[in-house]
Length: 243
Image 1 (cartoon, rainbow, N blue to C red):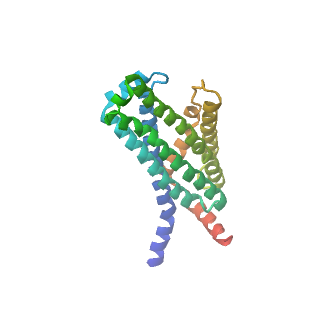
Image 2 (cartoon, rainbow, N blue to C red; image 1 turned 90 degrees about the vertical axis):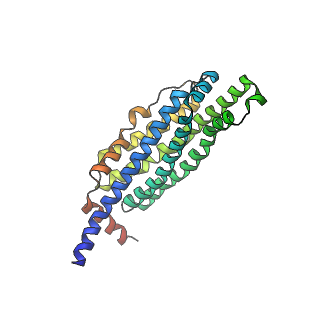
Image 3 (cartoon, helix red, strand yellow; image 1 turned 135 degrees about the horizontal axis):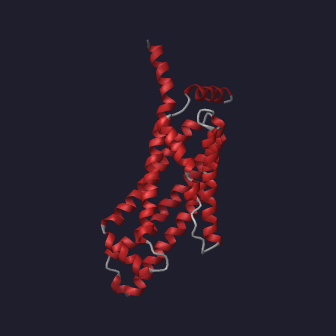
């Protein structure tokens, strides 16, 4: 009876890990997507007065947007733990590289959020009288411009981590190979977008909005299907042999 229970536990463990990873990926996607779209609805490039008026009119929603953004980064940290646990048997070195790229991106994104919080401090701290309206608005706009460019820096790593993730998915056998291919394409979209933002200041196209489907497919697959347990166990056994 005990052996039967242990066997059932072994079979459900990778599926449970996959579904937790899928749930965390969903939380990350919602937080990141809602946060970025909301920010873009307030931020008017080149128009400090309109941007500041939008922030003031948003009230507590701007603070909620900040908290949601932060929650997304926390979810990302836990996500990489469960993805590493799930994909480590496929190739430890590639799994470590995947985790390292995420671990590098998270401090960049969180520290960059100070630029996002700066307008909240300025608007609630009585700084207007020290600067004058025009200079005050320009200062807020500077922090938001820095925030957007900080996002583009972090997005390079958000693209790069998808390359080892895509490779691991492609080689795994317990997740469809096509998802791995689409993940690599998604990674290219993020990297190209970010680099062109710095190389071509007038670049406004978001290639990643057309290439992100690999992440969506992986998210849904992990949540709904999980993984092929038998194929996962084969990788796990092989990984133990090569230690």
